[in-house]
Every structure is written in structure tokens, then in C-alpha cells.
Amino acid sequence: MLNVAVLISGAGSNLRALLDAADEPDYPAHIVAIGADRDADGLQHAADFGIPSFSVPYRAYASRDTWGEELATQLRAWSPDLVVLSGLMRLLPENVVAEFGPQIINTHPAYLPEFPGAHGVRDALASGAGQTGASIIQVDDGIDTGPILAQERVAIEPGDTETTLHARIKPVERRLLIDVVRRIATGDIDLS
Ligand code: GAR
Image (cartoon, rainbow, N blue to C red; front, side, top):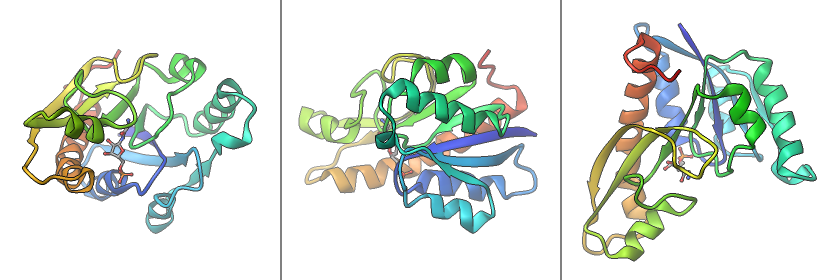
């Protein structure tokens, strides 16, 4: 069984889908803890599933590095085999990547390397492109630069807004995320 810690910043809808998948008896991964960089709404999903959660509020720390030290301390307590960034809207500090990498993955609402960063959906829409996508990547020290583990195209429809487009991307992200975590757990994907 693969022990997974998940980090979020927002609603955690993709986290919720992963929790539902992990609740199935034949799913080979177990969510051991859920953390956030703020008082995220999505922490409620941890409570719903009886899973421990923690918050390390970014703004309470003097620097990214001191925040990262506390985040690493919290994660370490759960000895995760894999850390999933599921809508964590912060660049992970180097110390966290050094300690938990290469076993860290991230979901991103665009077809990387297209539209990296915090506004992947907005940037795709603004570009005038006819399609964007969803990606699951391995995390390195860059901004959405790590190796791509899975990705799929999503069409941009006339009249799309950031909200409507993101709402069509998320189900694709969820499916890819659940599949990638399963494949890491079964050894089909080797992150080392
Ligand atoms: C997801 O679309 C995820 O890919 C994105 O935030 C959303 C979180 O939604 N992450 C990024 O943009 C990271 N650069 P959720 O909180 O409802 O799961």
C-alpha cells in the first residue's frame, strides 16, 4: 500500500476524487494526511474521511524557507511514500523538494509545457488557442518543469470563461491523477 500525503490550497475537489478512489477496497494507495498552506476549504474533506490534516499558513512565516521547514516537519510525521500537490498554489521550497523528491507529483490545469504557473486556465484562454489540457507531472525545483507523467487535451469552446473551462478540465485532471497514483503504487510508474 502506497502512503500518500496530499497538499492543497483551495476547495480540494480533486483531492475529494482521490479520497473517493482510495476508499475503494482494490485501490493500492492510502491517504495518510492532508495539509494546506492556509485555512483551505478543502480541509473539510479530511474531516469527512476521518483523515488527519494540518495547516502551515504561508503568511505566518518570515520566509519561504522557514515555511518550508515547518511544512517538511509536518509531512515527515506521516512518512509518506508520495506527496501529491493537488491545487497547492505555492512553489515548494528547495528543502521540501530535496527531502521528499523525487516522490512528489503535481496536478496542473494545462497541457504542459504550455501555460505553466498559477494561472494556467486563464493564460490558455487569453492565448486564443483552440485547446488546452490537463497534466500530472513529477515535481522538481522549477515552476511546472518536471517530467510529464500523464496529460490529455481539452478543447476550448467558443464562449468559454475561466470558470467553464476549468470546470471541464478538472474531471480530466481527476481521472489522470487517480490513474497516475495507482500506477505509482503498482510500480508501473517509477519516480526514482
Ligand atoms: C486544479 O485545477 C489544479 O490543477 C490547480 O488548482 C486546481 C485545484 O482545484 N493547480 C494549479 O493551478 C497549480 N499551478 P481543487 O482545489 O478544486 O482540487
